[in-house]
Image (cartoon, rainbow, N blue to C red; front, side):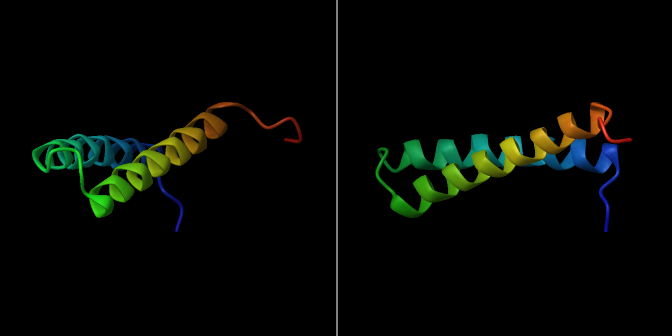
Length: 64
């Protein structure tokens, strides 16, 4: 299944909202929660990956 550009943008936006919410939850735990810290990290990595994919799609491939 290939994500459309709009679906990709929507997914990034949703993950950014989740990232903020998990960050708030982390702070509510006085900054000490290994599971929440891991979740923040993984969501951040997912956002970076999806942004890289979006950038890659926007740049024409040299081999095309």
